Amino acid sequence: MSKVWDTLIEIQQLLEESFEQTGVEVSEPGMDRFNQPGWVNRVWTSDKYRRAHVDVVDARLTKGLWMMHCCIFPHTHNPAPIYGFDVIAGKNKITGCFHDYSKAGEGEDWGDLF
Image 1 (cartoon, rainbow, N blue to C red):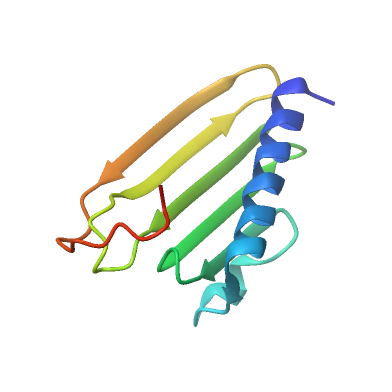
Image 2 (cartoon, rainbow, N blue to C red; image 1 turned 90 degrees about the vertical axis):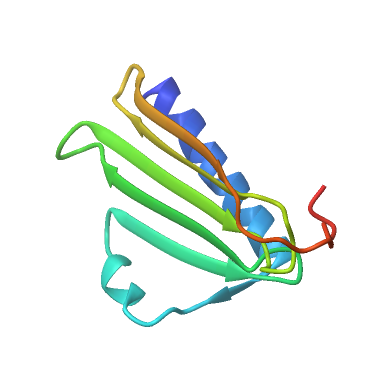
């Protein structure tokens, strides 16, 4: 259908597979309402990260857009930054992209993140 969308969906699948291998999926209160056709909202936790979140809105058929949000929070004792990105794409190009590293903790232990 679209090289852009196909590539982004592959990235989504790689992220979800990675979180499945390294963590345990959790059900957060209130998140069920977001998991419906065209909307994926998943959360994992592990000893390597406190929370990993993948949120995808697939509006290709209705709006011609595909959006993904991913955010990984380190444990509070880990001084690694919060890592996150958002991407919005039309059929032929990425129309918006945001990448973030935000300070999360003051601890000394970097764990196995890097």
